[in-house]
Image 1 (cartoon, each protein chain N blue to C red):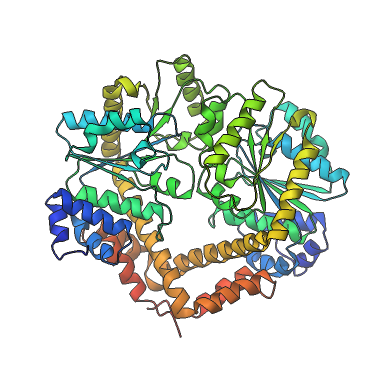
Image 2 (image 1 turned 180 degrees about the vertical axis):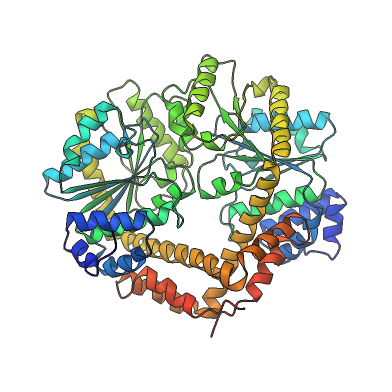
Amino acid sequence: MTASPDLAQAVIRGQYRALAQAVSLVEREDPAAERLLAEIYSSTGRARIIGITGSPGAGKSTLVAALAKHYRARKMRVGIIAVDPTSPFTGGAILGDRIRMADLYTDRGVFIRSMATRGFMGGLAKATNDVVDLLDASGFDIVIVETVGVGQDEVDIIRTVQSNIVLLVPGMGDDIQAIKAGIMEIGDVFAVNKADRPGADRTVNEITMMMSLVEEHGDWIPPIVKTVASTNQGTGDLDAAIGKHFDHLQTSGELDRRNRERVRIRIETMLKEKFMDRLIGKTITRADYEQLLDDVLRKKGNPHDAAEGLLARISFGR
Amino acid sequence: MTASPDLAQAVIRGQYRALAQAVSLVEREDPAAERLLAEIYSSTGRARIIGITGSPGAGKSTLVAALAKHYRARKMRVGIIAVDPTSPFTGGAILGDRIRMADLYTDRGVFIRSMATRGFMGGLAKATNDVVDLLDASGFDIVIVETVGVGQDEVDIIRTVQSNIVLLVPGMGDDIQAIKAGIMEIGDVFAVNKADRPGADRTVNEITMMMSLVEEHGDWIPPIVKTVASTNQGTGDLDAAIGKHFDHLQTSGELDRRNRERVRIRIETMLKEKFMDRLIGKTITRADYEQLLDDVLRKKGNPHDAAEGLLARISFGR
């Protein structure tokens, strides 16, 4: 499978098979992927990019499925990218989940891809962003990215979505403080899932309390929505909250700011990666670079001088 | 306060005030800090660097204090770096914690620093590593780094410690799955703290079960230790487990591999940061760079070509 000259056009026309082929190129880190991504880029910018962050077992995938059906009923096309390696979308599913999601898998208005495969050279965050672009260019109205929210790649991914939903479940007791210290600050909307369980209101209160400890909200106070994803309760409320957040993003200028930040992160990530690739090979051989690391490890040098020494060999132009 | 020419020597001789001054230079990102760090680097490499990762409320700081006292009783000097912004070491302490830790604060064999201040330009991970180096060079035998384990910086920090202890508490129920999916893989030793609470054994079993799901352990199976940090129970067992892990690191060659990885991360982080600094300024003005971002945002370009265009202006030497 290679990128045919008109693959980009076929993706932009919304052809499902072309999209699947393009996504595979990105996943295999095929050299043709970069050119393809450059070609489709001008057709991006229309999709709503939503992140759903929560612990395994919180019901993320079930909620994603419920939201996807909600949007499908409104004739919107929905892309789903599962980054959580324990996600049912990833294939490690229990039977019930599979059955619940079966109709999504046969619907050509839904594109599901798991990015759980490890070892993307260019980074999981870059690969995920590339697939978001492909879905966007291919006319998908909504792209949902599902993450656990732990780890460098996932945090990088969350930084590039437009609205991030943080999913919690009742009955975490003392532990709510626990997980969420880092996560409270990245939630644009909070969903308390499995809200038919005892303690849902307490969880809502705890989130409110935790939120009061976060210093900066700007002028957006994240709403808290109760859901029971497995029986589809609260899905409409959640969509409404997401919609309100999107309105806020637009009217406040924050959407532009986030999109700009997304562009910045993408370009700088690429710059840094390509820089390291060229440095090792052009400025120093791989063998000499490994030797340099050894020398620093053996105290025959130090990290600061090693870095400066390499950079001194580079001419930055102008 | 500036770096006197012999500040590096005073740090290496183990002078407490010189160390405090050097740490302040790093914290203020004083230009003199880089040279100082290069000068002390050859004196590093003797300290044991231990990470303690756990949720706020899990009792990390209490356990760190218990371990610190354990090592002090053995005449070892102990550095403590708190990265968790909710840590009692950071000053947001409740009175009980403060009292428990009061004798540590007056002991010149203990150096405590909170790195919770936001906005290190060069990154929190770099600043933390720099302080670890200063403590190491200054003759501290043990350096304990306390993190929540959420977020990009913290994951970067955890990647550079020698032994990482993951702290859990009983009674997390279903939720243990929750938090720990990402964290299970970074634990060299697990501590179940507050083990006098009901459910401690169940938590131990759950960790064992979760651990069986992690594919790669190499030949080290992380031990699980029960502790009650507030009454100092299990501290000796925990130290023994850490000691065994250190023996394993040495005999397996893993210590060398981790130290080498630490050097690699440090050099590459510096290279990428310094590269971006020079690129913007030397290759392109800040104003032109912001314009480039705007152009990509407005689809007058794409991230791929923008990055390639900048890199094409750079000569990589040889």
